[in-house]
Amino acid sequence: MRYSFGKTRRVTRSGDFTKIIRLGTCVADGTLVLFALPRAAGDEAMRIGITIPKKTGNAVVRNRWKRLIRESFRQQQANLPAGFEFIVRPKRGAKPDWIAIQQSIPRLAVKAAKRANQFNSQG
Image (cartoon, rainbow, N blue to C red):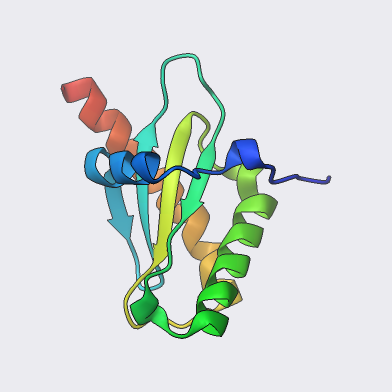
């Protein structure tokens, strides 16, 4: 099966990044930090944004992180919870490891979705 990763699947505006990070649920492991925010009711589309701080390394290292995270999301988007916006960044001191990223993304996305749904049902 072929999965695309078009512009409609990406968080691109600065205000959206800020909103998701401030209002969303944060989960992390040894490789990645993931923020998740539920989308409006009835909107089942999933969007992701990737942010790589300059402290992570030079441009080559930052671009490698982006490529690996983007490709992992593209391949696993059918296994991720629908109706959420995600922001992903590497954990400080982590190395860009394909296998670790492949394992982290679905685990963190499910964990963040559960936590966000619990928070919304309580609030």
